[in-house]
Image 1 (cartoon, rainbow, N blue to C red):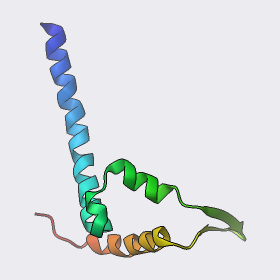
Image 2 (image 1 turned 90 degrees about the vertical axis):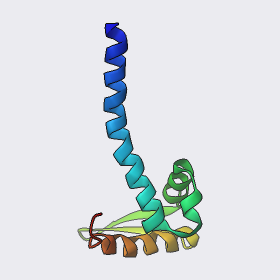
Image 3 (image 1 turned 180 degrees about the horizontal axis):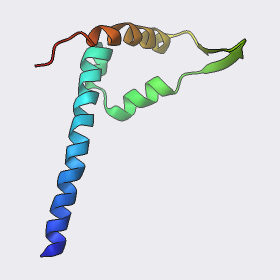
Image 4 (image 1 turned 120 degrees about the vertical axis):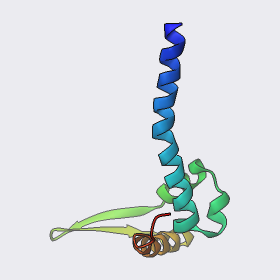
Length: 92
């Protein structure tokens, strides 16, 4: 009936939003993170990257983010260096 058609259209719209975000996440894992991070789930990556001890310092019109030293800090720096290089990769 009408409800089933509406539900099918809704699922199609949700999938059209979800699919590009999943593709972007897969590309970020493969090209941005690399290494053993490729096999990690989205929740594990989010937890590892966002649960970092740090401090935000406001000093003379500057904002400084000071992170604790460790493996995640090195990973964040590596990702920040890799991502600008990805802009020049041709599509296709």
